[in-house]
Length: 253
Image (cartoon, rainbow, N blue to C red; front, top):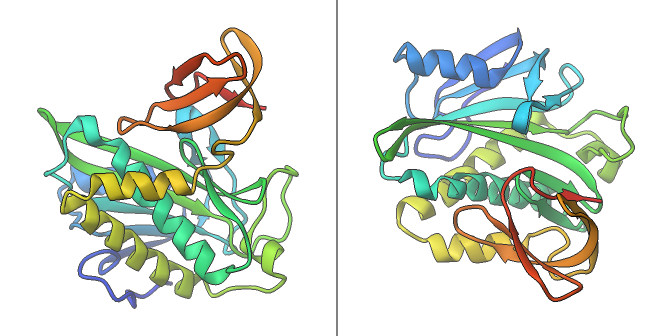
């Protein structure tokens, strides 16, 4: 069980706990459709049996070891064109939380929706929107953060316990994360898009560093130059050509 101990106005003040479920994002969407979800409600579980990642990927998590939850928000001030800022809010909040508990580690955001410690993935984000006209009516912000899981089937994954060498309180991590999400979310509501974009660029994985990629034309070396407000990734290839990519149009090698 989890308590609403965070020092927030609305984020995490209501908690819907499920010992086990297929996907917290799915459960959260059902609550929205039934009109029984207040702003800031968190759907959280100890065991997610069919967690979902971006573009249909799956997210596997050891029971009772990690934070697997979905946050419901109603950002009706936000236009569809600005929806990527919700990814920015989530990414910055998770990065801030990890930096707080793992102060010596390098925390970065691997575009578009993964959080890295060094060169390993520690967290995934899946944000799903429902729309009303040109505005976003509601969002489900799904977060899977590896906290106390000691081993993974993939060598590219890590957790807080692996990085620190000791276990963490899931409640404390959740509280700090809720407070961080609300801080950046309120910045967005206040119109601080340029500041949020700048903070996001500072956290970008492989930013302005020569790295290997693959797109529809094949493998290449290039430099990430930034991310535009609509979420488009900008890469300058070694040849000097500047290319722009949407989700799944380029792959980190």
